Length: 165
Ligand SMILES: [Fe+2]
Image 1 (tube, rainbow, N blue to C red):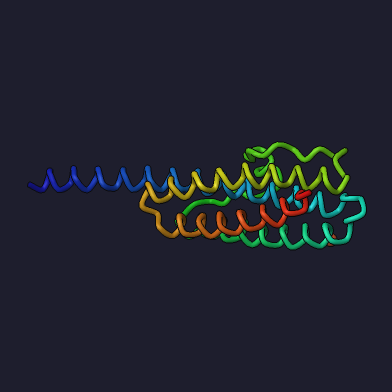
Image 2 (cartoon, rainbow, N blue to C red):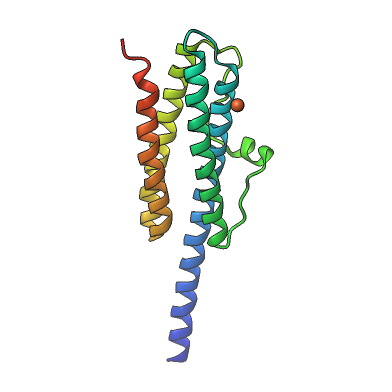
């Protein structure tokens, strides 16, 4: 009887460890992607040019600030689960799934078009993360990803509204 209980306990612990490892990987992936998107939005904030310069310069800074808050929330959720946040510039560059922001794209419309693309692809990976976290019964991480997804959808709309003819 003791042996059966021990075996059962070991199995449950292994399953918990696997879930924990999967959540660390998932959260670190999104820490990297979110920090990288933050850096691309700042790149846009600094370099955008054209008739809508000031409006976009200010909008991009607001978007960047929001992303930076989510970087912090994701990293702290990771460490709350006992993981190690991989958040230096070099760690993020090695891990991010985002394409680089081309340094020759500076015209206002082209910059907005590029950011809309980034928000769409980032948003879709965040939606996948909601489902993965829920699948691992990590309701708090799923909730964090859900908050991020809602904000990103709204901010994608802010950006895309500039492209309406
Ligand atoms: Fe600035």
